[in-house]
Length: 480
Ligand code: NAD
Image 1 (cartoon, helix red, strand yellow):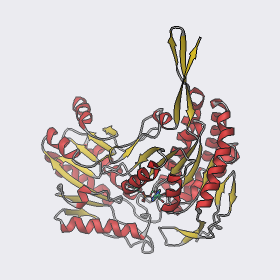
Image 2 (spheres, helix red, strand yellow):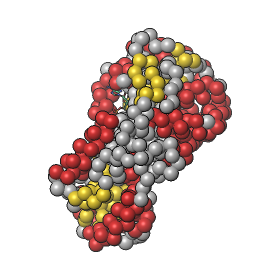
Image 3 (tube, rainbow, N blue to C red):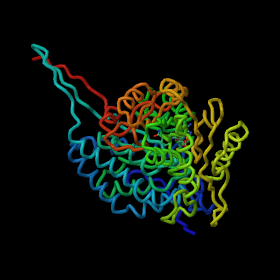
Image 4 (tube, rainbow, N blue to C red):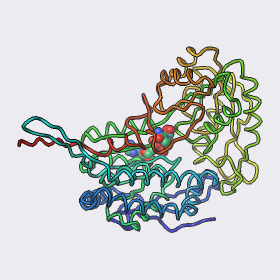
């Protein structure tokens, strides 16, 4: 059993006690064991973090972009140096397999900060000749930004929000999910060690009300959420009072379309990645797998045998492919969807239950589950499950599958498998999704904008597009 000391808040470049006097427990979902107590921020603590952020931001914004970039690059080096320790902490808090956390979570967080550290010196305004006058624009930071995270990729999300925010000269008050509060605190320590001024990155832990206090805070200029659609709607309502800038990275029910001419092995790999990586707890997952009727049997043969070969178990074991879901409550929700799939007439071809072998009975393990004979209207096809449950549907024409793929209120991502590259582009052009892949899935290089259409979100993370979301433009007219 791993026990850590009580975790405090991180404000003004140091750990401080919360004034609420309240704590909650963070639990290892793979064992049910308590990892440690976490102090809960009060509204007064949020005020204190914002005040500290305002002071820090003035110092930070007064530096050149190149100076900020150099400091952020030191944070990148420290993140990479501490990869093993951070990855283990992430596994402890999330239940995800170490083989993933080791090579994705911290790595993609560090890659993001490195990208924006490189961009920091090139953030600039424009110049306009106006005859006897000229005008120029300054691209200025927003001020203090709030970051609110989900629990599936805790350190990556904290980096994806703080990297661009800080590179642009903002300060951030960050609230990780209450399910996974540990690694954001480590990121705060790393920023301080790298030389980021006190107050530029603060961490306040707690539940929804802490996020709501941030969202409504008069001295916070922007809120960026990664979370569910219902929380996104509450954030928009809360932010309306002070008309904050808002970025929302929300849920999905994305289609993965596999045409008969696809490289079948690659398509099967993508379907597995798009449904069972991180136990299916990925927002952009392609959980509606549309397979062209003529290859359905061949596709399923390969898919099912590879699914059965996946190793479920101790997330700390480097051989494990499928770890624990985030909590017992979430497991019950996922198992409820599986029961709904059975009741609504989908055919269960593999998985379908809780996994209890190999000492997994104390955790929240669910077998990778595949349903066929799925159709629109079934709960498993309509709703985001956020667990290892794949729905396979069949189609016979391109036109039909595009219409069905778009028949959802979500629009986070989509994938198309085909060897006909013209068809690939033609289909993607008609899909209502913010991120699309042709002949791959769930690859998110930092240079590529990431975000959703429709109810999957507002705004984009990563890439130069993020600079737009963390700066504001000042126009200056100069009479000569
Ligand atoms: P959630 O919406 O329950 O919680 C997200 C965060 O919002 C948490 O930190 C929570 O404490 C906070 N929160 C809750 N109520 C709030 C309120 N009223 N005001 C302000 N903050 C509040 O989501 P979750 O269960 O942590 O994460 C799962 C969801 O996140 C899924 O829907 C998934 O698709 C989505 N997600 C999206 C992306 C993306 O990039 N689009 C990435 C990961 C997860």
